[in-house]
Structure formats: C-alpha cells, structure tokens
Figure 1 (cartoon, one colour):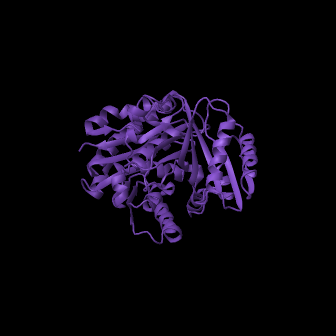
Figure 2 (cartoon, rainbow, N blue to C red; figure 1 turned 90 degrees about the vertical axis):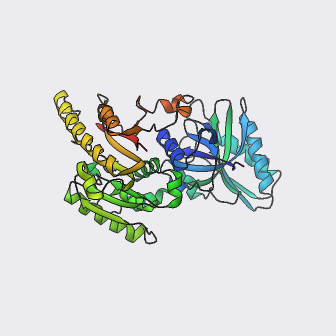
Figure 3 (cartoon, rainbow, N blue to C red; figure 1 turned 45 degrees about the vertical axis):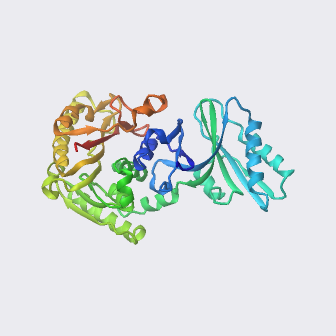
Length: 420
C-alpha cells in the first residue's frame, strides 16, 4: 500500500533538488506523480526528513487537486471548506496561501486570503488572520517559521499551490528548511575564508545525498572519503548525516584547517554523534596507498578548481589550465577507483569555464570509461524526456553547472559509479 503523497518545494537549483530527493530515497519513476519547475509530488515515506535534504525548502502533505480551468474563487472555496471542516473548535486561525510557479501570471494571494476569511467568518467563531508573502507569490521559509505555519495544528497553516499543466496541486506545509541551523553550522566555524570560494553547506549536503542510496542512509553507516578536503565542509555535513569520514589534501594547512573545523563542529553541533573523522596530508593521485583497495563506500569531493581568475582567462591561459586539470584528475580518478567498493559512488565538482563553456569532465570521458567508471545521470530519462525545464538545467552530458552570476569558473557536478 502506497503512503500519502507529499509535495516538495525546491530551492534555487530545482534539477539538483529533484536529483537529491530521488537519490536519497531511491524513488522510482512510478513514485513521482508530478514534476514542475519548482517542485514535485511523490508518494511519501516516513523516512523523509527535511533536515536531511539541502535542496528542499518545504515539504507539504498533499490535500487535493483542482483541474484546469479553475478560478481563484474555486481555490478560495476549497480552502475555506478545508479549514471549516478541521478547525470547528479553534479560537484562532492563521493561514497563508503560497503560489509556486515560474510560468504565467500568479494567483492573487491577497484576493484568495480575503475571500477565505470572509467565508470563515460566517461559519466559525475563531479570530481569523492571514499572512501575505513579503515578495513574490509565495511565503519565504523565514515567514513560515516566524508565523509558525508549519505546525501539526491545522489552525496554523500555509497552503502551497503547485501548478502542473492541466491541474494545480494543493498541499499543507508540514516542514520547512531550518535556515538558522545552516547559519549556525557555517558562519561560526573557526576557519572560514569566503574569498577562497568555500562550498555552501547546502550544496555539500546535496552532493552527499547524490552519493547516498536510501539503503545506506537507513543503516547510518559507511565510510565517506574526500580526497580534496580543503576546509572540511563536506566532511562536516557527512558526519552529521551518519558517515565516518576520511579527509585528505595535498596541503598540510588544509588538513589543519579541516581538523580544527571538525573539532569545533563536534563540540558545538555533534556531541551525540557516534561517527568518526580522520585526516591525512596526502596526494589524491595516490590515495589508494593510504586507504587500500575497496575500502570506501562513497567518495564526495570539491575537486581542485584551479586558478581563481579575476577576469576570464586568455586562450593560452585556458589551455594551460585545462591541460593541468586533465592530468591531475586522470591520475586522481584512477587512484579513487581503487579505493571504492564495487558499485560504490563518486560525486564530485570539477571546474567549468563559463565564458567558453569548457568542461574538464568532457575531456576526461574516455579515460574514465577506460578506468572502469559508469556515468550516472543526475536525473533519470523518464524525467528528462517529459520535463523540458529540468532537461534544460543539465548539460548534454547530463551533469549540472552550479555557479553564481559573477563567477568565472563554475562547478560541474558529476556522478559516477564503480563497475560492480
């Protein structure tokens, strides 16, 4: 028997958010009922926890759907009827309506909320108040948190509307991403050098989940290796998600930085964790010498991104840079392949030169195949063939480019598996 459907509202990188959700919970194509440019509706699981997901901003319990064409008054009537049925004995009702869609004209949230309030007044004696979005057609997670609209009590509700072609799905928010927790784990670290392009914690969490099948997540065991560990961001989040971790880096200073950051994290945020961390100054091109063959469940890493250019590199600079990267990664991937267990996953970011669209990964494809890796598309064909919005967010190699508008070198996110 399938469980009650859930609605996931994604963050700024929907393709990554959907890929993370599918990987973490090993959702098959038939479990995903609807996919839109801002979210998805899927058969839920008691195992789904928003704190485990870096790319999901809200999780809502599915209530009902309205087939198109429909009017704002029909939405108003449907939500008013829901509140009347579930809040008959409440003294106060606080609600909001959020519209999650990038296409077309958004619904008038104020008109709908005023209409709901008017309809409730004639049927309930409760004090009634509604919350409007601060910007755009949807409440931010900060607004939902401040107004306590993700509670078990239906009298405090955010209703999410997720349009999908011929219908709109309507759900009630049950959980939101804890932004304050991310800030606490990030900004107070003893070594945080933003000028060096530190990986966002949410992205680190997404990468780990892309490498973590549900069967492994349920066991809360396994060894995750980061052979380019830098300041330890990926290792920190992997510890929190249940992995033992091993971090290595060619730089002795990076190892000291990682060790210091992880000690701080365990002291302030991980006192109940039973996972362990180890560090070693070592060359990623020889990592098998330190760990041994088939010792590792997953490898997740922010690869060396190269020179931090202040302007787009010249043709000569780009050729020199890419040649060095290809040589480094060919050797590193050979050594990493040896430490992975059969069927083990490798998820990594590689440099991608945005102006010329130069991909280091593309230049490594033949070598990776010869080593024995299988490419794992970030999203299944069943999604890509029916969802242009997601197909357009991936490259022709079915990888994803993660970058800010001002960046010169972006991150190309790749996923590989070792031949079983």
